[in-house]
Structure formats: C-alpha cells, structure tokens
Image (cartoon, rainbow, N blue to C red; front, side, top):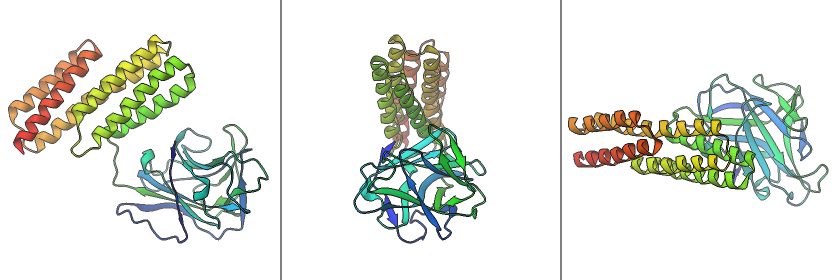
Length: 326
C-alpha cells in the first residue's frame, strides 16, 4: 500500500503518458451517489480489453458536506470481486475533490499486470463511519450501461454483492510495459511483506521485514541506468539469509523454501539477462564462455551461499568486460 497525492481531473481528456491507452470506462451521466463508509466497501468490476500494465484508475468521487473527512480514502485493485488484493493506494482526504469529478489514482508503482478478458475489481475503503459529518460518495448510474462488470457492495469481510447498476470509472493501461525480473523481485517483496503481517510474531516478522528491505533495494539497483545486477544479486543473497534466519525463529519451513528458491532463480536469471544483452552488443567470446561457466557452476553449487557468491562475482566480471568494449 502506498500513500500518494492524487489528481482530480475536471475533464475527461486522455493522460499525457505517450504509451498509455484508455481501456475500460463508464462515463455515463450519473443518476445518484453512494456513501463510502467503514460498514462496507463499494466496488465495481470490469473486464480489461488490453493486456499490459495498469497505469491509472479514475473514479467519480467527491467529498460530501462541509469539511474534510476524518479518514483517508483507499482505492484497491482486486483480481475480480471477491478476489485477491493486487495493490492499493491511499488518497489523503484533502486530495479528494469537493465536487463530483474524476479522481485519477496512479497505480503504475504498484506494478499490476492486466490481461485482456481477465476480470478486475475496483474497491473503495475508508474508516469513516456511516452518517459522518463529512464523507466520500462515489457516483453511479441506476442502470447497466457497462457490459464488462457491475457495481458491487461489500457484505462485510471479503464478500460482495453485484447490483444492476454501474459506478462511474475509467482505467488506463500501458500495453508496452512487459514484466521484467525487477517486477518479479518487487512482487516477491510484496508477498513476503504480507506474510510478515500475517505471522505477527515479532522475531519472525523482523527477519522477514529485513528480507523485504533487501528486495526493495535490489529493485532499485535493477532500475538504475545502467542497472547493477551484481549489486542486486548481493541484495538477494542478504534477503536469502534473512529468510533463513526467520525459519530459525519459527517461520514455516515449507513457505521459506518457496521464497528461497525464487531468490536463487532471480539471481541466475539476472546474470543470464545481462549475458544475453552483452552478446548482442558484441561481447568477446572469452567473457561469454566465462559467464556461461559461472552459470553452470552456480547450478551445481550445493549451498545458496556458494551459489550467490558465484553469480555475484560473475556479474561483476561481466560488467567489467562490457565496460571494456564500450
């Protein structure tokens, strides 16, 4: 979950992101509003028509009555409703428009990949109780103009009931963004963060949180220009060590095995990706052979510590060889 400043769009024009495309929308004239409250969540299902990365979610929402609501507004994206949470953004109360308008929420940092024909759900959440002096309301039409989904009302907990109406919304997608290893490491961190919260055990959660921190740093290394795979592999090794330490504090060993296997897979893939790119750019045969040998040695290694050491050293050597050819 992130806390961001959101932009209220008073018009319905396209965004100024070159590769961004409007995907799904219901921009019919609203016939009513519904209060967003703590008693139950409000939602809207939709069916993407474009495969790519979710960029923005726009909802026609406004503050009602004078003043600013006590609690912020959280916008969530789920894999259908009900369905797993894919990402969420907290919009500060003061950033929600005072008059009905499109509130554009940036979901790009959440790295949510959407697929054509695979349903999603938009959900609004707040801590404001029913009949608050100041509250949020999401505009809707008491009809069913949008064929790809329907308005939803939470039943408490994770349940939802579909209504014969639609809320006012729009989504934008960037079809040019494809999933990368950095995205996979980011998703790994999100998964471990949720497991840390679920565990609740202080000693275990501290170790898992340390692993998440290293994963986040690795993502930053991979998104730098140029990316630093060697440093990222070192971060992944530290994350590996932290997860192993969590097991000693009582974390489930089966769950840990899956997390550890993923980290080792990421490290090998990073070196392979750098090698492939370097070969295309004219890497010498000796450096190519040395990197291939390192990948084979890492595969044969009997401990994760040894595997990460081999991969990290090879990544540094490869980067040096690439720099020498520039």
